[in-house]
Length: 345
Ligand code: AHG
Ligand code: MN
Ligand code: MN
Ligand code: MN
Image (tube, rainbow, N blue to C red; front, top):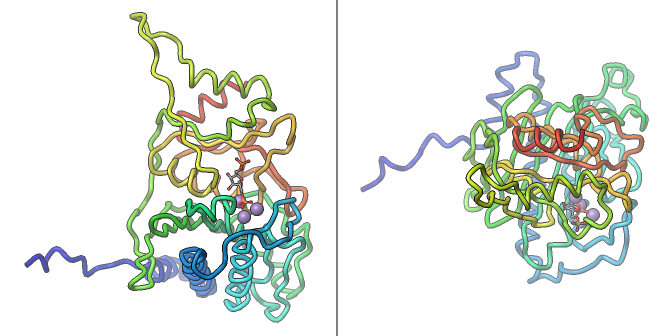
């Protein structure tokens, strides 16, 4: 009974990537191998997060990273797992990580074509409370010249705008692990980890964000430092004008998890707007361009949304000045973003 209801045509991430590869006759399979390594890192990070309280992996590592964050033990382990996976793929030439001051070069693979930027654990302040966290990744291809010469790319070769990315996405470790990936010019696809099978299964094909939704997601504890236009914009969501017949307008709902991956995933599914504006205290914002803002902006845009910096400039066109450079960010549903942009003009 019910056997006919079981889906036997399961699309795993491996199958999905392989099928994508076959659509491009020029593809070498390198990207497929890189993705295999990526998904292994997500599975192992998910595994350790789930077991953290049992195996003494909660709390601080006792160190700080370049951007001044106190590292949690899992920030360090997630970073080590990610680096090992990228090295093991043999297809990654250079890696930028939130937890590493300098670029990591895999000189043992001089012909590797890809560069990866990652935030191994995003939202790590939430770890010990068992709140959702994630891993963010951004993949780009080195220039033909760098590849042909098998030389180490210089830092300036790696400081490119998000428009240069070939793929990006994230995995959210929540009640289940959700992987979202998009490739340049393609759709956004979501996969759920079936931990019994150890496979990411396509559960959210061709994700499209709702055009609007009355939800905003921002750390309002920073409002003291916000620019006037930012304050006015959020006030307009909380204190909408009265309707034509004199009734109160309906204010927006507030949702803020404090893990960008989780806030962005909800925004992707339900719609709304997520912001981490630049402000008087942090004139460059908090979130980092290469491994937080740009990959997320690519996902949002390719799902039909928009993403801009605090100057209302398309985020994907922002070129970082250094590997850990930051930017203010607003991203979300298309129409909600039109309001953000209008309010800041
Ligand atoms: P990370 O844990 O990778 O350092 O990133 C933290 C980021 C992001 O996840 C989140 O949106 C934001 O910091 C939260 O910052 P606040 O605590 O300032 O709201
Ligand atoms: Mn951090
Ligand atoms: Mn982060
Ligand atoms: Mn992090």
